[in-house]
Length: 508
Image (spheres, helix red, strand yellow):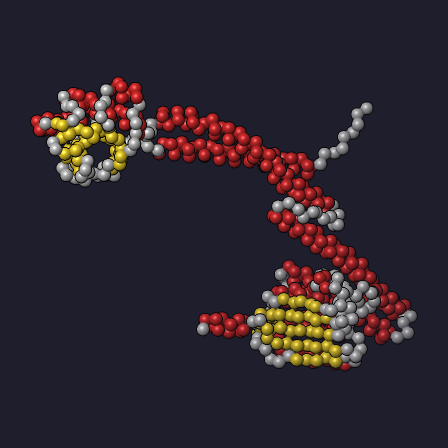
């Protein structure tokens, strides 16, 4: 009986495939790099001039042959011999396929140039080079005296290699008879042979060692990449099936750590959103059931004729229906705001005047609850906004302050200019907000007050407030020292007027 094998993990297979692809890519990259290095070396060798040693030996042999054929001897040359030599140089150079020059060594001037590039008396800088002929060559050509070797530049800048005899006496001056040829590039067969002889084996050895080392390093690097990526994939798969408590270790390279941190933050947000929606479903189910029960009960009593006070029953039905209508309206507004489909009627708004109007409108409610509402809202530079929606925002914030501030407390409604825009602050001495609730205060469906009752809201008011402010290009924030320490809501909205003024000052 065979033992059933556990199912393979697709993430591990994908990790192995990714690791294999990384290793192959590293090997290919190394191979391409080595090929490029070899090509560059070849090009470098092709660009190098040919070695001068062969030219020195070949030219000194020609020099010895020319001297012997001309019947000259090393030493003093007669005037007749000098004339004959100078006259025959062009023909001799053509016969031997070389360039022949007669140069006055002390003055570095040209007496004769078979190529005709240098005129009589032209200056020529000779670059002398110390070179010793091989013994076998000295013995073979029977050379007497000390030859000279070196290079010089032609009038067109080309480099020439020369061999000559410095002790051929022409007239009364110490002159030299030079035999030269243009320094050539190395021929391809020589370059390839030199490459194979000197560089091919070391390059292959270096390639093998580099391949082994690079594959080992690539394996370590690929594991460093694939391990956290595999954990991310496993975490994402777990979240996809509803395990929102998944977190991955933030390890590996900086980029992988950033992805892991973003993943953990995303999962936290999803978890909070899911919990908020669960809370909302539980809360809204209760909040919908309560008015519906009242509506159903009072309407049934009216239908059965059992209501002792039909007007009171009708009023209760009307109030509960209004409460249901507000809940549905808030849900609809939030959905439209988040989808960007809620129309905004933009016009110039003085937030100072609007705050003053809202404050005066709600001051009566504050007095009924024995609260002191301080209003400090002078006229401010206009902003571009929807007056109804901004009134809704201020009404919501001030109403919440009144609702959650105990009797005898104080509320401040202030408006002023700040940072290129207008700022409205609603501050109270009420219940305050716990530190753990502050980050979630603007979440949909989230409520600081967990107690249920007829006065319980839907947890959408602050979410709608934030969406409205952001739709106006502004921002809203909240601070609180803790439970029982009150809270402060701050709204900032951009003002085109203040922006224009700031730009004008910047140009001055």
